[in-house]
Image (cartoon, rainbow, N blue to C red; front, side, top):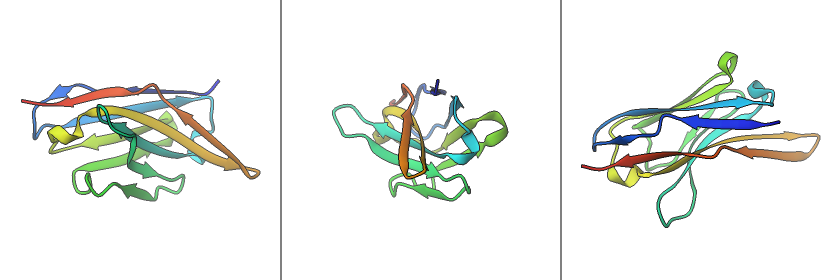
Length: 119
């Protein structure tokens, strides 16, 4: 079975840093595009950062220069390094894996990990 497990969420002060991890199983990890999404309380889920199987990265404008996404294919893990955290970064952060195989779109989501940024 496919499983994505996020970890690393915590409560931090503004300006602090966190590293989120997403460990995947049940997929050929290296062939999947991976992404981090977040859902602030009462708001829509939004893309934070993504990284393709070829390690091309993309970031939401709101996190550019502060967050870094990376992947360790040997560990089947994608990371989100978050620096200079702001209260607006408070959200449940979700890991996503995506691949299109033989024209079929495959997508998997983790359960989320909570990040709270406050004084």
